[in-house]
Every structure is written in C-alpha cells, then in structure tokens.
Length: 395
Ligand SMILES: *Cc1c(COP(=O)(O)O)cnc(C)c1O
Image 1 (cartoon, rainbow, N blue to C red):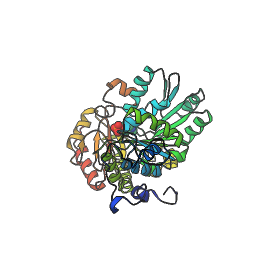
Image 2 (image 1 turned 30 degrees about the horizontal axis):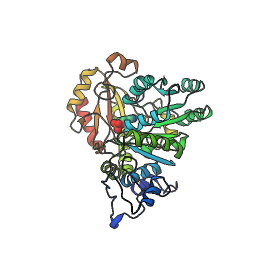
Image 3 (image 1 turned 90 degrees about the vertical axis):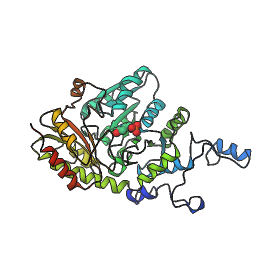
Image 4 (image 1 turned 60 degrees about the horizontal axis):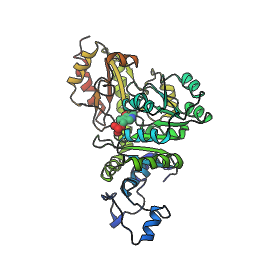
C-alpha cells in the first residue's frame, strides 16, 4: 500500500485495512477496551517488551487507532505515524518531546492561534528560545536558520490569509544546519500536499479538519521517520493525550471520502475566489489558486490542489462583515474549517479572538477580513448565496 503507484483516493479507502478483520467484518471494529488479555505470562511479557507485536493498554496503542495511524502514514508517504486526542495535543506533544531547555525553535508569525500561544507563552517558560519570522520572507527565514536551531516549525498555507511557504527551500537549508523541519499540513490535507516528499521530517495534522471532514470529532496525528515518531510516541503514551478508539473510527470513516471531499472543496474555493475577485464590495481575495496571489507560483510547485479555505476583505469594515455573515443561508457562523458544510467567520471571533484589534493589524489581519471554508455543497448555490448577501452591503 505504500507504493507510490497507488493513488491517494484508493489509499484513503484501503490503507490500513487490507488485512481481514475478526468475523469477516467489512468495517474496522471499534476495540472499545482499555486492556488486552494474554494466554500466558510469557506471551504477555514478550508483547510488553516488544518481542512480538500486540497491544497492552489503550493509552499506548489500540488496534482501531493503529488502523487510522497506518492510513495517514501511507497518505503522507511517511515511515511512521502516531495519533493524539486533538490537533493541539499533536503539536504540543511534538514540541515538548523534541525540545529541552536551551534549545531554539524557529517558526512563522502566521502560525495557528493555539500553536502561536505555545511559542509565545509555554515554551519560553521552559527556557526554550523562540524566533518568529515574517511568514513569506524566505530570505529572513534562511538567514535565521543559519544561526542554529533544533526545530523549524512551518505551516503552509497559513491561517487566515493563506500565505504560502516554499517547504522544499526551507527544509533543505534546515537539513544543512541540522534542524528538524516540522510542517502543519492541516490546511492542505495529504490530498493536496505531502511535505515529506518536499524534504520535511515531520508532518502534523489536526484531523479535526479535513481528515475527519465532518466537524464531529477532535483528533491529531504526527507522521515522520520511525526514530522521531517513536520519540514523540514515548512522550505521548505517558503524557496521556491518547486517541479514543471510537474517535479513531469516526476519522477512518470520514477519510473514506477524503479525496472526493477535498477535490470538490478545491473546486468550490477556486470558483468562489474568482467570483469574489470581481465583486465591487470585495477589496481583496486571498487564495493560493489565484494567479494574482503572492504565493501562487510556490503553491503551484508544491501543491496538487489549492485547498478549500480562502479569505477576503470587504469594503466598509466590520459592519460589512456583519451584513454578509448575518445574511448567508448556507453557512454556520462557527469556528473551525474543513467540514462538509461551509463555515465562515472573522478572525476576531475565530482564529485570533485572543488578540486585540491593534495586535491583529500588526499581523496583517484587518477587521474587514472573512475566513471562508468551502464545504462540498454545489458551488453555484454557494455563489448565489454570497451574491445576494454581498449586494446588501453599503460601502
Ligand atoms: C485547528 C487547527 C489546529 C488545532 O487542532 P485541534 O484539533 O483543534 O486541536 C492546529 N493547526 C491548524 C492549522 C488548525 O487549523
């Protein structure tokens, strides 16, 4: 299944599930058990010490959870994968497993809100030095990396203005200077982008978004080399941020349609971006698929599709945002993204709620910005809905 001749669409369905399940079950059984019994003490001991495969205790590993890990591992072209109770658990366990006091981490200013809180508040408390660079300033990132870092932590495309980083370029220089490169691949999903093929060492997912795809469950994963993933796994199994088998089942079920959903969402986001670009009430559209986008050339090089999330600025400030979002029909006014249904909101109630207006402006996030996560609905209907609401805006 890891053969690159097998395509992502097939792997989303089959990876991790080629072996027969007990009783000929067609679907992955949910092994709702904490502990696993053995015939004798020798077998138990051999499993505990890793001499034979098997499971001991579900905080460490569980057969249902293993199927999900295998599926994501194959889709991300990685040697190993491990899972977590949420995307933030994946991120924090990775950072705390790999870093120690005195280490230095380099990241970008546009990282996900929770991740940025770890960089700005949690890591410094443990004596870990954090440097945040301007997201699209590749020269600055490269010259910083030359100063020496344990870890380079990237996200591409970013939240909420969809900036794009050349993963291959940064991973290459990080390797040269002995830094581990980790990439949060949540926005792209493995259908659109595989950071390991671009030279990254670790790929992180909030499976809460595209992998699960239905906004009904929290989950996180990390993929990479056996050595790095094992180091993170050994931290997580004691730290305890383990994934519940029932949740793993939900994500496995969601992932059956991963390629179908993401291809549709790529298309919807592209149509909607083009529509918004020509609307007089819209002053800017941020989507890596648009030729006008600053990250388009890099995105075209490293992504197979441009993703389902876009953002745009409205003329007339925050009151225009209220008019638009209060008048859309096919929309949940809610945080999160990557669901089958369309979700939208302004950064001031979603990703950047903890910052004030000035801090958001400092990050280049205007109050008139709307982040829009296209669902799998019909694009014509979504555009007609946007059209009637945008035409109510006075600017
Ligand atoms: C949502 C998100 C996270 C956090 O994931 P949770 O599953 O909510 O903990 C991390 N990174 C990105 C890019 C996200 O969108």
